[in-house]
Length: 246
Image (cartoon, rainbow, N blue to C red):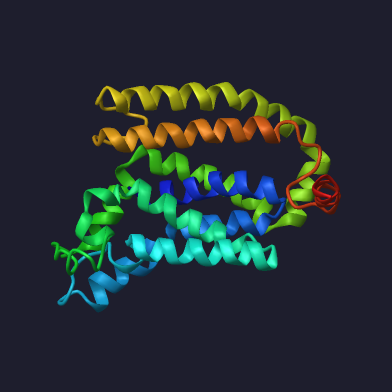
C-alpha cells in the first residue's frame, strides 16, 4: 500500500477517535502511527541494514510491536486518561492491515518464524516514488490530506474558517456523504469481484476492498461532522463531552 493512502486512512480513523475523545492531538497521533512503520523500517531495512536485511517491512511491521504499543496505550488510557498512545497504536494497526502483513508471516510474526526475508532493494526510493506518482488514489489522498490536516495543525485557522464558513462547510460535508459512501461501495464491490478499478489503480483485490471500507468510513465521519456547530477540540465541545461523561 502507498504512503499517502496510509496517511489518509490514519486521518480518517483519527477523526473518528478524535470525535470520540474531542481531542485534535488524537487525530495527529493516529495519522503518525499510520505512516510510522514505513518512516522507520524502510530507511532502516534498505539503507542502514541493507546488506544484512534488505527488507522494508521489519520491526515496526511486526505483530509484536503492534501489541506492545496497543498494550501501553490501553494502560495509559486507564491510568492517565490519555488516548494518544492508543491512537498511535491504532494507526500502526491500520498500516499493518493495509500492508496485508498476514501474507508475510515471517515478518509479521517475527521472531517466531525466523529472521526477515531478504528482498531486492536496489533503487527502492526511485521505484517507490514512480509508483506514488503514477497512482491516481495517491493524488486524491494528497489533496484530502491537506484539507483534513489544516484544522488540526492550525486550529486558529480552522476556528476562523468555521466561524466564517461553518454552515457552508457542513452542507458540503453532508453532500459528500452519498458520494463517499457510494464511491466506497463501488470500490469495495470491484475488489470483492476481483476487478481492476481506475479510481485506485490497484490490481490487488484486497487492496480495493480495504480502500472501499476506508472511503465508507470517511463518508460516515463526514455525516457526523456535518451536524457539528463547533470545530473538533474546541473548549465548548470538550465541556459538553465532559458533562455527558459525568
